[in-house]
Image (cartoon, rainbow, N blue to C red):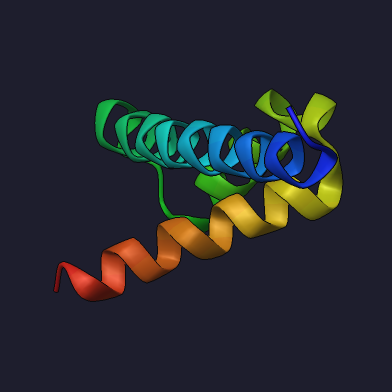
Length: 70
């Protein structure tokens, strides 16, 4: 596999994983009835191992999902 193909595969896998994590965030909010501040705090704690930048991207993706669904 070429380097470019490997990078593309890795990016695709991360995109799929991120989509799964956004749905996990949605379930977390739904199951716990968190308000926005509580949800952000819980997500930052639960996903801290992913790094702050990625957690921010996940929260932004979740916010976009909510906007599309309203």
